[in-house]
Length: 253
Image (tube, rainbow, N blue to C red; front, side):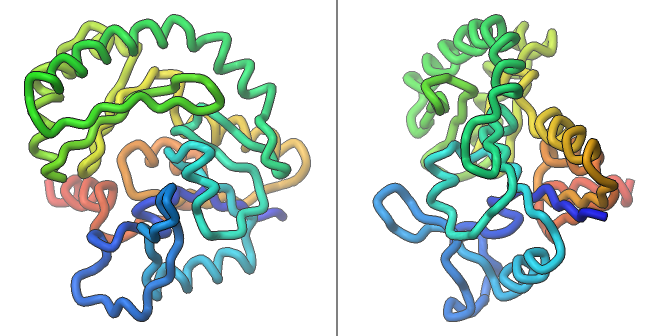
């Protein structure tokens, strides 16, 4: 039986120094990812390092990440299986070549959603011009615009919620389900509904199951990870993350 783990990266396997547990010994941290200029910006704690070594011994590890191909290439880990990028928009095979079948499926449906994304994005950019600190950016990878992401110089989720409440939540393309949003920390993403981690993982699982019986784990920190994790036999959730806190609150209520 083959064992697979579909593994979110940021805030699951490593995080920025600011997000590391207070009081952690910097000497125990290992650099896991870099900025484009070569500066180290993501680190693994001792427990996260142990987790990686444990997984690498018994699992085929499939990264499932919002990172684009360039950001993924700056991750300092030896992945050998397929890779899911851009929230599920792109899949790379083991040779790091784009999965053409998956890409064709996405591209058949993307144009209508792309127009709707740009329509909402124009309103986001107008809001950002009128209110300081917002940093909207369309994510373009493999010469295709996939989704948009907004950060704020304050680094807080609360400020992004004002934009969300005033511009995004009641927008017709959000209401009709063509687009969806995801907020986690200082990161607000707007995505076409066809771009999601769950669909990409389901596609890979279908292929794996054709060749052998598989045991699957899913690991992630955010609400958008939950659907792909639900496809797996078991789930791993880092403590004190968005998904962990959501489940804890559900238990209390």
